[in-house]
Image 1 (cartoon, rainbow over the protein chains, first blue to last red):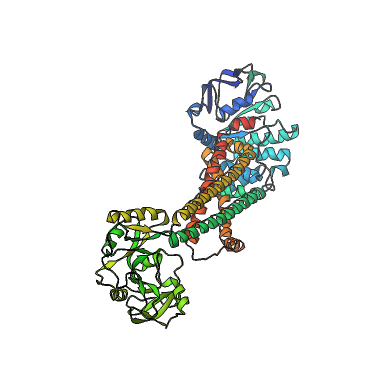
Image 2 (tube, rainbow over the protein chains, first blue to last red; image 1 turned 120 degrees about the vertical axis):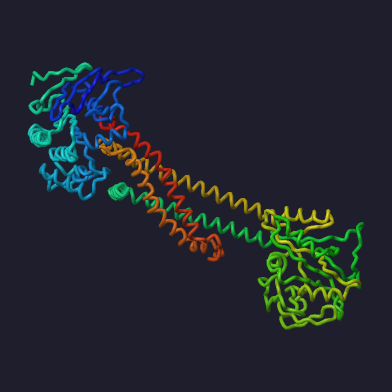
Length: 228
Length: 407
């Protein structure tokens, strides 16, 4: 049983009438609790692949199964619901809403899901406290350090207890020390809750956290786990 | 829905300056629209009153033509006396039963028979006109001849009043008559109970009497007494715009032997009423377009500004319908917050504007039906807010989070 099963996925963009191929016929699967690193140089399509896996973007062909549910056949609303309940996303530039407090940014994931406001607040507060941001709940992202912002982003990803985390250059915008600190916190949670994770990185992500590594190169993907 | 509402409210409060500007914009638009609508409605109602007073009535009579049938019931002094209508046209008598036929015309609202007889005063020989009215036909008389509202001194007839007269102001001034004076009509004395000023009317008499009294007085001056007859029918039409049709249909009742006369101002006033109605409609349309553009521009800017935020929310699982609803609701909340006080301010400021424009403002005017007008303005503003937010909301829905976040 896989959490995610990718089968012959292809993606190309139409650039002024010309088809720009990003990748074609890539297949792989992710087991529960497995941490998969997708490496490759900038511009090879790692972010595009994560976008498709999260349902934010569509592939040209191929299938993606999330626990036997075909993502490619889902409507936009079904994909949104899937993200809201089962998938967490971490972005390179954190993508926090600048006008919302740390607490509100985390709570946002639980909104419009029928969860009571008090319960939402409680869960968001708990996870922020666990990540050492108990004193920063009411701060706006601009009032937080880069490391603290990344921790808010991790809290937002973890607060709804996802089955799969998609992390796009999760430590790309932070220094090595902060990256190590943030990743330690993230991996503790991932291992504790047996969450699967796919991290895309061009090299900043420490390979020691990954169980397996796939390299995206020239539109194809290959397993280079043995190099870890 | 509660969550969408509270989130929308929070979002509006997060950008207080922008929200304040939008609310203020709606406030000013609504206040301005309300004042303009009230002014134009006032203008329209004033013209409508003029039409009702001057243009929605006429009289029907059968003229004595040179080559036609002669008068049957001749006055004892046919040179000086006789049935007539303005301007000095001798008339035939017609059965009062014609009232039913005239009343059956769709464009006729009310009708009453009228006796207008030129009579020679027995003592000094001066000639005056005597009018016999059916006092109980109040509506028809009110809009065509005389009624209680035309009294300038004394009182008007009660339906049961007998052997008393009401005199026209010009006749009263000429003969120095006032309530309590006595006039001689066909060698009988009648006390004056009131003086009326009937302004511009289709026909008027110097002295008015109750129908039965007038009939009795006129009979004294005729060679053959009156049956149930009248020489004029006073007709009130259903409106200035229908007056000409009503006149035409009434004239056709006696196969072309009837003439109709009106003060002939109705058509012109109706034209001006049309102008006012059109102006009102165009001004309202222009105001609605301006509010729509203001609102649409504001919502479009907001969605453009929040594009990244919308992409993040979609990425973390917010559905399109939630984002759509929040944008439309935001627009409605702002419009209602500005529109309701703006409309109230418009109503409150209207008397001041009316005073500045020297408008004879009267709170009894029908157009000041506050709940109805208020409801219209409010519903209008909310609808504009909804429709103006649709395109920005669709833009938000169409925002591709993958594209925005990738960039």
